[in-house]
Length: 264
Image (cartoon, rainbow, N blue to C red; front, side, top):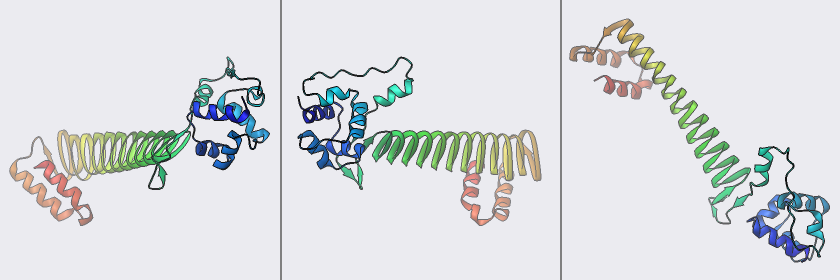
């Protein structure tokens, strides 16, 4: 079996296209085709890399008399991560969408659907992930989910976004155990409009302990303008609504209207 026949066989066994293999070796697709046709041969450094990718010896690649591949077994002290890396074979679709492969699975993945250690795509999943819909340990996207998450709509242990939900959340609308936002909801809640067990707000706060210009609390209510314990009466609700209309600036109008709806 010739070198070219072995290369073609290994490439297909590992589910690589000629284009994908060309990207890995930094050559053209035509070069891969010539290698597989025994018209040309790769350089020594590429042969060494080929042996690592396909887990085979140089003897197997270059000796026509050796027809059975003997896999190189990992050393006993090799880390689990390195073993996984050797078995993490890249996959990339030939079909393109918006100038990107339909899917790409690899260490550095970039595709419409991207999965990898580092992933970029419309839908991306990875240790470090960027996409319109993004899922990862470090995640950035329009809709973002991760341990550290940044996005228009963000979910994570540490979350930052226009709408943010997490253990620690920071956003225009924030909800979490500890939350900071224009509108904030959480065990510890800080914002212009705040609700929670411990609620601290600029304009209004509702909670077990409430501190704001208007404070509505169950146990403690500290309001510099108005304080109230328990449920608001119809007259009190109208008073709070009128006060908000007069004192809240126009750029917080949407948040004000949402909070007015919340208390009515």
